[in-house]
Image 1: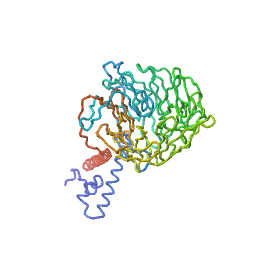
Image 2: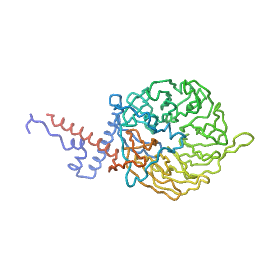
Image 3: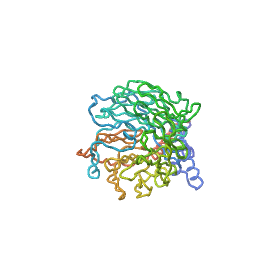
Image 4: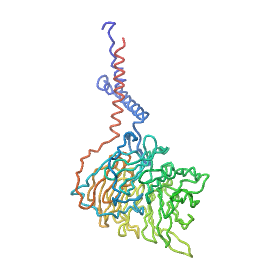
Length: 530
């Protein structure tokens, strides 16, 4: 080779920059193969580090066991790419789902009859739209759909047209929550609460808004942590607001300088009606129910279950209920006026609280406890004396459907694994939102697990609660939102053949290709050396 010609890169340099290539060229000994394999792994880790630093990937982990895998970061929506509806919403649409898990927060659907022959004809998809991140669920009223999302410039309350799934209005404000351990994902967690033309929303960092539900006009606003001098929870504000009469009832997190963790506000003005020095609160959403002959606020606090007075928030009863890490998430289920079912994950279990009146006071005590049904991120439903829910298993992606006898806690049967999804009850059937994004339909019967169908739906991990309203099923996660027609007499759809995609493998492949591309670039530059 003449002196004025570029010198060729040495095989050793080629192997350093592209170690996989080296394995098939100069790896003529065990020692060299080991060195090149180690270089390949180092190269892969560097590639992952570049993708991570660039904000293109994240680690998926719910806080227990090993991380669940690598996930691509989805580009956050913005007003520039939000699809606005060109149609007026149907104000007379009777579909109604006013807040988290329905009108009573019990996960029970009571609208028009639904079709349950999903095995013969799966639900027909009406529309599908891209949404921002977060675990918020869906509220429906007056032909409109409301939810909360994480957008590029903050948290957003969004309103969509039920007819076509396109946007009507949005209200954006500062906020970008992500827990310090990056276990729960970014974005808001609560569900909007609808009441008489007003929408009440609570963001992951405690931003409380009252909006006109038709137009999105801001009526009043309050930062609950600043106003009551409390601290946010580790995994963000998750308790959805509750309306009772003229009062808007909220929990305010963890006691700090301020001690008031249960508050009633005037729903029209936001003025304080009363505030109570309750225990540190957790992730359960407050609601009202009549137990022991008295209508009251039911709370799942950090270390106990509580009943509180609607008049002033004073304590009526409490029982110890201490979930690991204070992660009291599951909604209690009212069995009748004398019994309340509670459940918790992280290895804790479930129990039945019995209420009696003693000297004019409410006495509350457990009459049974066991570990048969450990609700983690989900809540159970009650049907004809039996409870149905997902039991937190021994690994991150395991939660089997379980049927318990409510009166005794006896396990009647244990069914399939649906992951940490969500369950609704509709006409003697269980609509199951699987953690994988699939949706399933099963019979709510003590006679054994009877799954009718399990169908692909959303793409990716789904912790959001589904919504049933007007014979339509609405599901969403941190990427997309879909509406299905399941009304009785509706047309069937088609089941898409979805190939299970491992984002982790594609990310590893991308990291490998990135580093080898850089290696090839290095080789090209090296070949130009004189």
